[in-house]
Image 1 (cartoon, rainbow, N blue to C red):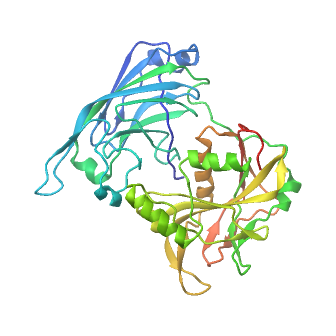
Image 2 (image 1 turned 90 degrees about the horizontal axis):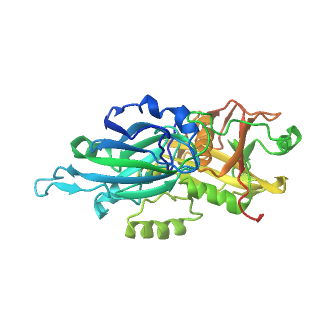
Image 3 (image 1 turned 30 degrees about the vertical axis):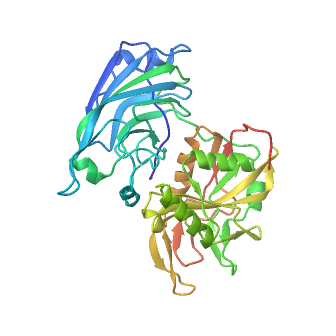
Length: 398
């Protein structure tokens, strides 16, 4: 299963000041006196700290620190790192944990955090394949932890820069307020959702169609929440809303270039469900690779509700390259045929925002396990549909 991550850190309560010094292979484990039993009994305010050394050649470093939902963490970092000259006429580039200012040259490079300095200290909750969204830390950062997980620290760079980088950053991680729960406990286990009945699932189409009516992608995710809650959870988890037209693409692409931002909003084709095109398109991808590879989905508001909130039908697939469109011999995106991986990618990225209150995997009465897209590509599934219930944090607005 593929995945990423979001803001967070944490320190175990009840033990002495601890130091974690690490090379690229990973950090040493927290001392036994700071183990889970001490942390679970922490009070309302934290007082513990960890120190971690992050070598400049690091991509992602496992700190061996498990954080809890609700913790408030303060990061403070010092030190310096250096990149060797990029060519014969250049000089060494030395920088602090805030990194180097982004330049026009950075537009063609891929960095985990698009709006942070090149070489800056960054973090994520969960391993690189777990779905969390990387976030900026720099020299000083305070953050509230939305969900529990393992803390990773990294440098905002690619493998080429990491290979030649020297120096290190020294990071102090202090708990300002303790969180709730027990480190390592399952997060948001599947629970039965009474409102999602067999009769309801039977009413929801299993597949979307192209403009000619040819059946296409599978409806593999259902989200329960208002329109504002839907757009908020995607924005928070790092998905971007996709352009609806080529003219939008040209304008947004120009603005992204001028602002030195990653551009991920290439338009996707219109597909149909409930007799209309998608209400939203969202994408998640690395800069530059967006042309050939991105995680993307389409969302339709259904005519059905659960507890007074609409059900949104999602068809999520992962573009991994190009192939021949069997309808017209044109060029089209090729999707990963194991589409359950994309379903779980949506699960991981959205759940790790802290904006999902419940989730379940359900098997509809006419489960779809194998089929072809409208362009002719095959896909396979275990037939289950992911259901996410968003936190009801605002007045109903459909």
